[in-house]
Length: 229
Image (cartoon, rainbow, N blue to C red; front, top):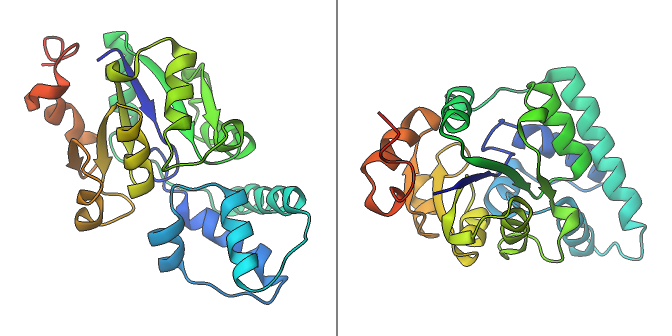
Protein backbone atom coordinates (compact mmCIF):
# COMPACT_ATOMS: atom_id res chain seq x y z
CA UNK A 1 0.00 0.00 0.00
CA UNK A 2 1.46 3.34 -1.02
CA UNK A 3 -1.21 5.85 -0.03
CA UNK A 4 -4.06 6.50 2.38
CA UNK A 5 -7.07 8.46 1.16
CA UNK A 6 -9.31 9.90 3.85
CA UNK A 7 -12.92 10.86 3.75
CA UNK A 8 -13.48 13.74 6.20
CA UNK A 9 -16.97 14.02 7.70
CA UNK A 10 -17.35 11.27 10.27
CA UNK A 11 -13.94 9.88 9.33
CA UNK A 12 -11.60 12.53 10.67
CA UNK A 13 -14.04 14.80 12.50
CA UNK A 14 -17.50 14.23 13.95
CA UNK A 15 -19.11 16.86 11.73
CA UNK A 16 -22.37 15.20 10.64
CA UNK A 17 -24.40 16.97 13.37
CA UNK A 18 -22.96 20.30 12.21
CA UNK A 19 -23.92 19.60 8.61
CA UNK A 20 -27.40 18.54 9.69
CA UNK A 21 -27.89 21.74 11.69
CA UNK A 22 -26.81 23.80 8.66
CA UNK A 23 -29.36 22.03 6.46
CA UNK A 24 -32.00 22.57 9.15
CA UNK A 25 -31.40 26.32 9.06
CA UNK A 26 -31.62 26.33 5.28
CA UNK A 27 -34.74 24.19 4.98
CA UNK A 28 -36.52 26.09 7.74
CA UNK A 29 -36.85 28.99 5.29
CA UNK A 30 -39.06 26.75 3.15
CA UNK A 31 -41.05 25.34 6.05
CA UNK A 32 -39.38 21.94 5.63
CA UNK A 33 -38.58 19.67 8.55
CA UNK A 34 -36.54 16.49 8.34
CA UNK A 35 -34.91 14.26 10.90
CA UNK A 36 -31.32 13.35 11.69
CA UNK A 37 -31.90 9.64 11.11
CA UNK A 38 -32.95 10.30 7.52
CA UNK A 39 -29.90 12.48 6.97
CA UNK A 40 -27.53 9.97 8.53
CA UNK A 41 -28.98 6.84 6.94
CA UNK A 42 -29.71 8.11 3.45
CA UNK A 43 -27.63 11.19 2.74
CA UNK A 44 -24.37 10.68 4.61
CA UNK A 45 -21.55 10.59 2.09
CA UNK A 46 -23.30 12.65 -0.60
CA UNK A 47 -22.78 16.30 -1.41
CA UNK A 48 -24.82 19.41 -0.65
CA UNK A 49 -26.09 20.00 -4.22
CA UNK A 50 -27.61 16.51 -4.39
CA UNK A 51 -29.14 16.74 -0.91
CA UNK A 52 -30.63 20.20 -1.34
CA UNK A 53 -32.03 19.45 -4.80
CA UNK A 54 -33.62 16.18 -3.69
CA UNK A 55 -35.20 17.54 -0.50
CA UNK A 56 -36.62 20.63 -2.18
CA UNK A 57 -37.98 18.68 -5.14
CA UNK A 58 -39.49 16.15 -2.74
CA UNK A 59 -41.50 19.07 -1.32
CA UNK A 60 -42.48 20.40 -4.74
CA UNK A 61 -40.01 23.29 -4.70
CA UNK A 62 -38.27 23.74 -8.05
CA UNK A 63 -36.58 26.34 -10.27
CA UNK A 64 -34.49 27.84 -7.47
CA UNK A 65 -30.91 29.08 -7.55
CA UNK A 66 -29.22 25.87 -6.40
CA UNK A 67 -25.64 27.25 -6.32
CA UNK A 68 -26.82 30.12 -4.10
CA UNK A 69 -28.60 27.70 -1.74
CA UNK A 70 -25.53 25.47 -1.56
CA UNK A 71 -23.38 28.47 -0.64
CA UNK A 72 -25.93 29.53 1.97
CA UNK A 73 -25.77 26.09 3.57
CA UNK A 74 -21.96 26.25 3.59
CA UNK A 75 -22.07 29.62 5.30
CA UNK A 76 -24.43 28.23 7.95
CA UNK A 77 -21.99 25.36 8.47
CA UNK A 78 -19.11 27.78 9.11
CA UNK A 79 -21.27 29.77 11.55
CA UNK A 80 -22.28 26.69 13.54
CA UNK A 81 -18.73 25.37 13.57
CA UNK A 82 -17.53 28.69 15.00
CA UNK A 83 -20.28 28.48 17.64
CA UNK A 84 -19.87 24.86 18.74
CA UNK A 85 -16.81 23.26 17.15
CA UNK A 86 -16.54 19.47 16.92
CA UNK A 87 -14.45 16.52 18.06
CA UNK A 88 -11.80 14.51 16.22
CA UNK A 89 -12.19 10.75 15.76
CA UNK A 90 -10.12 8.96 18.45
CA UNK A 91 -6.63 7.95 17.36
CA UNK A 92 -6.58 10.08 14.19
CA UNK A 93 -3.55 12.19 15.10
CA UNK A 94 -1.56 9.11 16.13
CA UNK A 95 -2.52 7.31 12.92
CA UNK A 96 -1.52 10.35 10.86
CA UNK A 97 1.87 10.49 12.58
CA UNK A 98 2.43 6.81 11.91
CA UNK A 99 1.66 6.97 8.19
CA UNK A 100 3.86 10.05 7.91
CA UNK A 101 6.70 8.09 9.49
CA UNK A 102 6.14 5.31 6.97
CA UNK A 103 6.33 7.77 4.10
CA UNK A 104 2.88 6.98 2.73
CA UNK A 105 1.19 9.52 0.51
CA UNK A 106 -2.06 11.12 1.72
CA UNK A 107 -5.11 12.81 0.26
CA UNK A 108 -8.57 13.97 1.28
CA UNK A 109 -11.55 12.89 -0.84
CA UNK A 110 -14.71 14.35 0.65
CA UNK A 111 -18.15 15.09 -0.72
CA UNK A 112 -18.11 18.37 1.20
CA UNK A 113 -17.26 21.64 -0.51
CA UNK A 114 -13.66 22.80 -0.68
CA UNK A 115 -14.65 25.71 1.56
CA UNK A 116 -15.98 23.41 4.31
CA UNK A 117 -13.07 20.98 3.97
CA UNK A 118 -10.49 23.73 4.44
CA UNK A 119 -12.45 25.15 7.38
CA UNK A 120 -12.53 21.76 9.13
CA UNK A 121 -8.89 20.86 8.49
CA UNK A 122 -7.77 24.30 9.67
CA UNK A 123 -9.86 23.99 12.81
CA UNK A 124 -7.95 20.87 13.90
CA UNK A 125 -4.56 22.09 12.67
CA UNK A 126 -3.87 19.58 9.88
CA UNK A 127 -4.55 21.51 6.66
CA UNK A 128 -0.86 21.46 5.72
CA UNK A 129 -0.76 17.68 6.16
CA UNK A 130 -2.78 17.15 2.98
CA UNK A 131 -1.19 18.46 -0.24
CA UNK A 132 -4.10 17.09 -2.26
CA UNK A 133 -7.75 17.74 -1.40
CA UNK A 134 -10.53 16.61 -3.72
CA UNK A 135 -14.00 17.96 -2.97
CA UNK A 136 -17.35 16.77 -4.22
CA UNK A 137 -17.74 19.88 -6.36
CA UNK A 138 -14.64 18.93 -8.37
CA UNK A 139 -15.92 15.66 -9.84
CA UNK A 140 -18.79 14.82 -12.15
CA UNK A 141 -20.49 12.18 -10.00
CA UNK A 142 -20.78 12.05 -6.18
CA UNK A 143 -20.27 8.98 -4.03
CA UNK A 144 -21.19 6.11 -4.43
CA UNK A 145 -19.62 6.70 -7.86
CA UNK A 146 -15.82 6.18 -7.72
CA UNK A 147 -14.93 9.52 -9.33
CA UNK A 148 -13.65 11.31 -6.24
CA UNK A 149 -11.30 8.51 -5.16
CA UNK A 150 -9.98 7.97 -8.67
CA UNK A 151 -9.25 11.69 -8.94
CA UNK A 152 -7.44 11.64 -5.58
CA UNK A 153 -5.29 8.70 -6.71
CA UNK A 154 -4.51 10.49 -9.97
CA UNK A 155 -3.38 13.63 -8.17
CA UNK A 156 -1.01 11.79 -5.84
CA UNK A 157 0.18 9.58 -8.72
CA UNK A 158 -0.64 6.25 -7.07
CA UNK A 159 -2.43 3.33 -8.71
CA UNK A 160 -5.92 2.75 -7.24
CA UNK A 161 -4.96 -0.78 -6.25
CA UNK A 162 -2.22 0.69 -4.03
CA UNK A 163 -4.58 3.02 -2.15
CA UNK A 164 -6.29 2.39 1.16
CA UNK A 165 -9.46 4.42 1.79
CA UNK A 166 -10.75 5.28 5.26
CA UNK A 167 -14.54 5.75 5.19
CA UNK A 168 -17.56 5.78 7.48
CA UNK A 169 -20.59 5.48 5.17
CA UNK A 170 -22.12 2.96 2.83
CA UNK A 171 -21.88 5.41 -0.08
CA UNK A 172 -18.21 6.01 0.61
CA UNK A 173 -17.34 2.33 0.89
CA UNK A 174 -19.13 1.56 -2.37
CA UNK A 175 -17.23 4.39 -4.06
CA UNK A 176 -13.88 3.11 -2.79
CA UNK A 177 -14.55 -0.48 -3.81
CA UNK A 178 -15.78 0.64 -7.25
CA UNK A 179 -12.50 2.51 -7.63
CA UNK A 180 -10.60 -0.72 -7.03
CA UNK A 181 -9.22 0.34 -3.66
CA UNK A 182 -9.04 -1.31 -0.27
CA UNK A 183 -11.32 0.20 2.32
CA UNK A 184 -11.48 0.23 6.10
CA UNK A 185 -14.77 1.46 7.57
CA UNK A 186 -15.08 3.25 10.90
CA UNK A 187 -18.02 2.73 13.24
CA UNK A 188 -18.43 6.46 13.77
CA UNK A 189 -21.60 7.14 11.78
CA UNK A 190 -23.48 3.98 10.79
CA UNK A 191 -24.02 0.61 12.41
CA UNK A 192 -21.85 -2.40 11.68
CA UNK A 193 -24.87 -4.11 10.14
CA UNK A 194 -25.32 -1.32 7.61
CA UNK A 195 -21.60 -1.04 6.82
CA UNK A 196 -21.32 -4.77 6.19
CA UNK A 197 -23.74 -4.50 3.27
CA UNK A 198 -21.11 -2.44 1.40
CA UNK A 199 -18.44 -5.10 2.06
CA UNK A 200 -15.44 -3.06 3.26
CA UNK A 201 -12.21 -4.99 3.82
CA UNK A 202 -12.47 -4.34 7.55
CA UNK A 203 -14.73 -2.55 10.03
CA UNK A 204 -13.16 -1.02 13.14
CA UNK A 205 -14.31 1.26 15.94
CA UNK A 206 -11.79 4.05 15.33
CA UNK A 207 -8.16 4.73 14.38
CA UNK A 208 -6.79 3.12 17.51
CA UNK A 209 -7.73 -0.22 15.96
CA UNK A 210 -6.70 0.37 12.34
CA UNK A 211 -2.98 -0.34 12.57
CA UNK A 212 -3.56 -3.70 14.23
CA UNK A 213 -6.14 -4.49 11.57
CA UNK A 214 -3.74 -3.71 8.72
CA UNK A 215 -1.01 -5.72 10.40
CA UNK A 216 -3.07 -8.91 10.51
CA UNK A 217 -5.05 -8.59 7.27
CA UNK A 218 -3.17 -10.36 4.43
CA UNK A 219 -4.71 -8.30 1.63
CA UNK A 220 -3.55 -5.04 3.25
CA UNK A 221 0.07 -6.02 3.89
CA UNK A 222 1.68 -5.41 0.49
CA UNK A 223 3.59 -2.33 1.57
CA UNK A 224 3.41 -1.52 5.24
CA UNK A 225 3.17 -4.76 7.21
CA UNK A 226 6.93 -5.05 7.66
CA UNK A 227 7.16 -1.47 8.98
CA UNK A 228 4.38 -1.60 11.56
CA UNK A 229 5.30 -2.97 14.96
